[in-house]
Amino acid sequence: MYAPADPERLLSYLGEQQERLQETSAAIQQIIPSLKHQLQENQSEYRAEIFEGLRGIRNFFDLSKQDLRKGDVLYTLGYNSMASQLFSGYFKEYHAWKDKQKIYSKVIFTYDAWFGKKREKRKYAEQRYLPKGVSPPGFMHFFKDWVGLIILTEKQKLCIAVKNQELADSYVQYFNLLWKQSVPGK
Image (cartoon, rainbow, N blue to C red):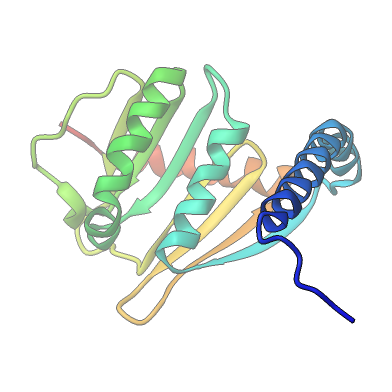
């Protein structure tokens, strides 16, 4: 013969489950530092990732928040008008973070992105412009050992990111060459 248990027993059962969950959470919090350390040790100095959509591209930009420190330089080449339309809100917050961290940026915009328009002065930023008529369907964004090729078209929003110090160094050389030939910003 069976008899139903007191419904108050459900609350007791729930309390037991909450207690187990707290114990599990405490155990996980204790091992997280060790897991992070192991992950860093096992991470290759080379890596490639694909970030899709606007959210994915923002995730790539957010990688710089983890890697960049005071005095570091962030480079952007070919930033176009579509990028400024799609990311203007995000970049207001991003630039505020960057300025607070005292991280420098050098940006070469396409001519149509904002040439001749009055731009907000930023203490840690310089900008220039590519010649009129040069307007690629994407741009490059690179820092430290990361290079991101960001494709922005009506049909595709994609970032191909590569972590490779030699590649990043070569892009800085390429950037500096174009910097000398680009038109200074106002």
